[in-house]
Amino acid sequence: MTAFRDLRHYIEHLTETLGADEVCRIEGAHWDLELGGITELLAEREGPALLFDDIPGYPTGFRVFTNFMGTPARSAAALGLPADTPKLDIVRAWKDISRDLRLIPPVEVATGAVLQNVLEGDDVDLTKFPAPRWHEGDGGRYIGTACMVVTRDPDSGWVNVGTYRVSVHGKDRLSVWFLGNRHARAIAHKYWDRGQACPIAVVVGQDPILSTAAAMSAPEGVSEYDLAGGLRGEGVEVLNAPGTELPVPAHAEIVMVGEMPPRDEESVLEGPFGEWTGYYTHSGQEPVVRVRRILHRDDPIILGAPPMLPTIPAGDQAVPLYSATVTWDHLEQAGVQNIQGVWAYARQLMMVISIKQTGAGDAMHALMAAASRKRTGGMERYAVVVDEDIDITDINHVLWAVFTRVDPAESIHILRSPTTAIDPRLSPTKREAGDLSMGLVLIDACKPFAWKDQYPRANRVDECYRAELRERWKGVLPL
Image 1 (cartoon, rainbow, N blue to C red):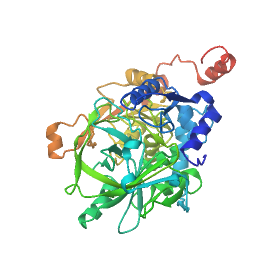
Image 2 (cartoon, helix red, strand yellow; image 1 turned 120 degrees about the vertical axis):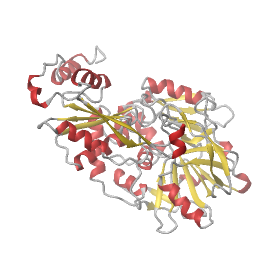
Image 3 (cartoon, helix red, strand yellow; image 1 turned 45 degrees about the vertical axis):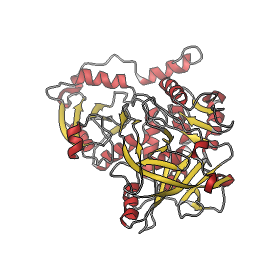
């Protein structure tokens, strides 16, 4: 895997490996809705990555970068794979890398590009950065959508890194919204229970491997920095943010350092915000970060991943690396045999599993194993199992299997499962009662094993001949 030095190295890598048109530089788009609207329109077409500059009201060079892994080719490039790697092979490579991962701790360095500008005291001013208002109904300007929130456990010294939504509330105030089961929230409560504010750093602008690791939710006691080091094959260069014991990437674009007091001491109205479910979610009094210090590079870049409808392959979701590989690995650990691949649709609202049947219970085994995976904030609504002849990366092919191989009276089962607080289907009554549960639909879309060899033959052109046709006509037809 390519060990990117920083976000700028990744941007250079995209243009060098995929072509100069892979990163589109846009000048003059406004931070209020226009950046978000352009990002969404281009993401719907699986268009280029977008680097916004000359944002009205801000100096040239104060930039925003979006749609950074919004195509399979960019996802492959981020992992150091050839740009034409088949989508399922990208997931398979990520699964294999993740399973055999050797944790590599970060490397402490004395200095880095993030220290080019250090703002303290009266110079602290978050409004100097073009934090976008991404959606019309957002309750504020969200500088953190693909950010890293760094905290340290006061007892063990464990450094946790997570991704949360972060909004600007003035020159020296941020808000952070944590779901109830997140490690950073538990760490913060340890400080609060002792009557202390929680030291915290918010990193905005880092390479895609760091971004992906921050969203992985490592086991308690394991730092996401160590995961990122294992994924990169070398330790992440970090330095302690001045005045703290919080390690931050030495070559990050922007780091905001401060403390988070208990909510009953100081809070702010956070949200609503257009989340990845495709709906606005949560508005309430949430903790603030009192920003004491800002570090940033010259000509800093905000890395943005504004949530959109989950059917849009936006930001880092063109290839569902984490959701698909976690389920795939869990299935293998559960003893499911002959798994051909796992794919996620609408983020992880539908998980599709491809198997090669060797026995009558194989499909149901795969479904029950998928249903048993512990969830830490996901909301998988549907689990579908299909035969190996189905291209699970093509939703139309998956739907064809569901429409033609499912008997609704025999092939569909419904269980109860945990969901998340941002689930739009939770009723007000269930929210008030703290009942975070939903239905989970299990769909067996395989040919019935007892007579699968007698199932009518499909009339689809096979993969070998497809490859021959693509090669022969690649200069003439968009195949």
